[in-house]
Each structure stands twice: as C-alpha cells, then as structure tokens.
Length: 447
Image (cartoon, rainbow, N blue to C red; front, side, top):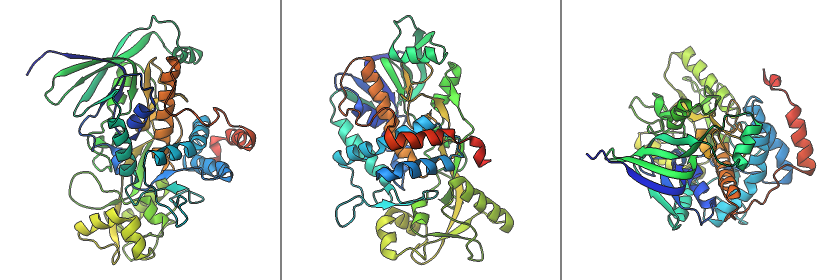
C-alpha cells in the first residue's frame, strides 16, 4: 500500500451522490469543474430508497395549507423562511424533473396524479409507483453522467476538510456570515478523503458541498444504508462549524418486522394514505394512521408495550388489489419474497429510525458557518422540517436547497446557471400575507 497522497484540483467538490448532490451538480455553471464523491457505490445512497413521493404546491390555494401542514407536523419549530422557499420553489423543481425525464404517475388526461400521506390535509404528492426516489435519482444520475465537467469517484470516503486562514476580500457568503456574527477566520478549500485501497486523496476546491446523508448507520434498526454515519457532523464539530437540532431524529412508524439483522425495509406511508390500516393482535384498529409520523410511531410503541409484542399488523384489506400491484408493486414483491401476500393477509410492522431533521446549520443559500462550505440534503439543517418531518418533504427540500447552493456558488463567480431562478426570492401578494401570519404563530401552540 502506498503512503503517497494523490492531489486533485477542481472548482467544486461535492461529497455525496444522492438527489441533493446530483441536482447541485446539474445546477452549477458548466464552466466549473466538479468532482463528486460517493462513499460506497452510487446505488447505496438513501435517495434510491425513497418510496412515497415528492410534495408540490399544485395550486395557488395550496400555499397556506401546505405551509400549515409542514408547521403542524414540525411542532411549529420550523424556520419559516425555509418553508416558504421550499413551497414556492416546488413547482419549478417538479417541472425541471419532468423535463429531465422523471416519469411521475399521471391521470387519464395526462395531468400529474397526486397521492396523500400522513399529516397532509390534501393530496399533493407526485410519485412513481413505490420507487419515486430511485426514479428521480436514476434520471438525475443519467443527466450528470453526460456532463463533461463532472467526474464521479465511487468508493471514496471523506475524512476531513482542508482549511486555511481567510485572508480573501469579503465575498457574498463571508459578508452574510459577518452580519450574523459568525467566525470567518478560516475558509474551506476542499477535502481530504481515502479510496478503496486506503490511498489518501487531497481535493483542493474553491467551493465544497456536503451532501453526504444522515446518521441511520449508527442505529441498530434503520431504513437507511449502513454507510450513513454522520461523517459531516463529526468533521463540523472538529472545526467548530455550527450544528443545529442534532437530537431531532424521526422514527418511521412502519418498517417490515423481521428478526434478521440488516437494514429495515420501509413500508411507505402512502400505503396508509391509500387505505392500509394498523391493527393490534386482535385485528382491531387502534390509531388514526394519517397522523404525523411521531404520533403514529408512539401509538405503535404503546400498543406493543400493552401486548408485550415486537410488532403490530398492517392490513391492506381496504386497498384495491390493482392499486397494490401497481402503485405498491415493489413493496408487494418484497413482502412476497418474505412470505407475506399483502393482498390476502396483514403484515408485521415496527417503527424504525428513518430520517434526521437536524444537521449542519445552513442559511437560505445552504451556506454553513464556514466560508466556501455548503451543506445540503439530510446532512444539513435549514429548518424546513422543524422537530418532525412532513411525509415526502425530504426529496423536495433536498432539491430546492441544493439548487440554491449551486446558484450561490455561481453568483459569487458572476456566472450564469443552467436553470435560472423562476420564483421570487421573497413571497408577494396573498402568499406574503399568509407568510406573515405564519411567522406570528408561536411555537408554544403545539405544547
């Protein structure tokens, strides 16, 4: 094994190849050279596992309901400006995905078909069968692989960041941070990583983007891939980069129960949105399945404790068979492989760690408290989700704020972006009025 360090240079290094990292790369100016890293294979990113779908504001009258659903689910601890940006950017993001070839389910007239999940007051979720994450990630990956300015390195793990004293003239990002009284004495200029052969790789870059996922790999039972071990959090702590809400971890109510070790298989919330019911050992319904995830998970835990059992049951008896084998095709097939026919019998389910609402603190531009360092996706905390994430907001939030990171990187270099911003930076008209009212709601209302 060689002890020599391989030195690489690029304009932007992106750590992570899920939807956040890929969409960021697609939104960067083509003049910039980009290196992307995947800790394992690209197929082992949590974006591939997302089942339910991606939210969208599908009408002007949906701004306030969408906002309220997100706040209520997040226990009103959400950062209002982030929620506003996510909702107003949603339609342009969905249009962009469709233009990139993402195949969302359609109605007979060709319009987008929406499904509903827990804590949503209406159906507003675009989906592709029960593999929406894989559909979006695959199409984004196909598009990124066609870019001559982007190079992907698989099986390459970030160990640290490169920092230097910040003697540069104040940039837009640094100026924003000074205004927030943040430390700008050091500046990120890339990362240090190692490949499969343990060889050290030093990548110097004028902008670094963390898109390396959450913390599921640190849990005994999680729907995440085991490689997601909070690498960015560890490095952020070592460099005094601000973190936020690191105790905000979401437990998903329904993963398929099995005594076998390994990643838990998710049973999408959209199953309950389409009529699947939670039953106790006597076959009786014991909770409202469409409450927020933390509420449903708590109800299941209480039921298991009451019965002294290690799971409850999920029945698809109210879901039409053709809906099961089309909309939930992969869940149906996986359960069959495990010995359960969900068209004929209930399946055993149990809560599992699913999502991390906290992370590396970022602003509305996805900038961290260290200049030239951005964080996006589940690695970051922009405050959208509050204390508990609304179902199917994760893919949308990741795409919106990864795009904003790319735009900020381009703006600092006075370069045009492939997909310019089509929504206003701040709400106007009726949306501005609704936004102001939501900003006045105190967190205490959910106590």
